[in-house]
Amino acid sequence: MRVWTVHARPPSQRRGGETLLVRDGFAWGALLAPTIWFLSNRLIALAAIHAAACIALAATLPGPVAGPLLLGLNLFIGFEARNLQAWWLGLRGWRTEGVVMGRDEEAAFLHLASWRPDLARVAR
Image (cartoon, rainbow, N blue to C red; front, side):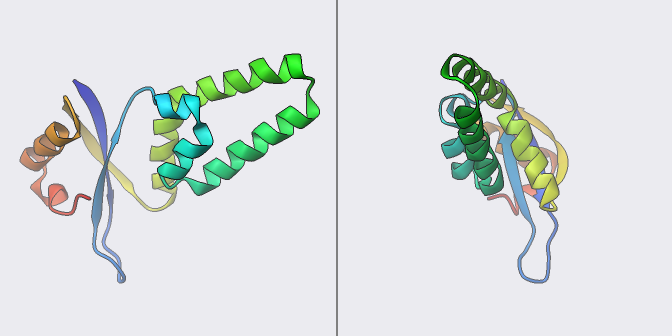
């Protein structure tokens, strides 16, 4: 079973409320291509920070040191990417509403619908 955190954005004057499920755990895409993973999850500022950090490390450190350091950075991002995504959602006004489990996103969504139908109605 996989664990998903439930994030909800309260309704505003311009748009209604939304609910988003973020899977917890290691992100292989974030390990292999962090900048692309950040961009695909609409984390544009984090993608820019990662790209700038990689460029700065590669430009200032010698090759034998920069390679392992960049690999370590990508490994850290692989472990923490989903937490960074949840943190970024919190900065944008989303609230963490709970945790659900399911074998995939659909099963987690069905569990959410049985537990909190009000959040399931506005899920995207």
